[in-house]
Length: 254
Image (cartoon, rainbow, N blue to C red):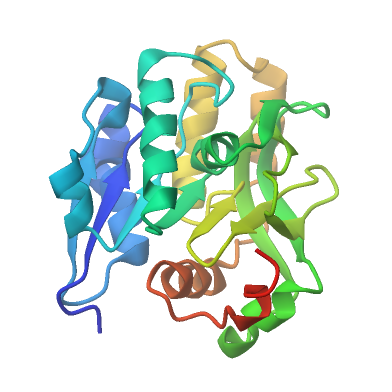
């Protein structure tokens, strides 16, 4: 199916020992969701300053930007370097899928604005609503207009880049998904996460004293009652990244 295609994960977070041992790191989590037979998947640890050079960029059909504990509105050296890379990928019309922090940094690189979420942390299972215009985009996938997804963020997209298209929202977060041209898409939630990964992450966030013990206990008590729509998200993400979506409705707008 994906014979000869090559993709890269731009890893924006440090792997915990648990995720490395159980899933092969976050790189392994993304490959498990997105990879198809015959494809090659590489990883660049951009949070450690490891970036593809111009020659390497040319070899890839698409890129995935992961989540991170860092703020997309921050100015760490690697974050600024990542913004420069994303601007270059845009100019080359490369496929880019941004997840959580990746969604936010992609927005910033394209001229939008990000910051702390006004409503605070959003952790757990969230129902998102696809916009009416996205029904054409996803029509071939036969997925519902509401989807559940695991969320874990305290920052958000506050203002979309010029010419970007809002394609999903939730009650708590105004911009859950956006598209920019035919080649770039951001998703605020985590289609790649399992409930197990979220439980582990809640414990890590609690240890960092970013959330209270009582909130962490409440979150864990509510987990497992409903599962995210992982199959639909896998179909949506792979179809976008590999150019299998109907994009004709965007042609005259962007």
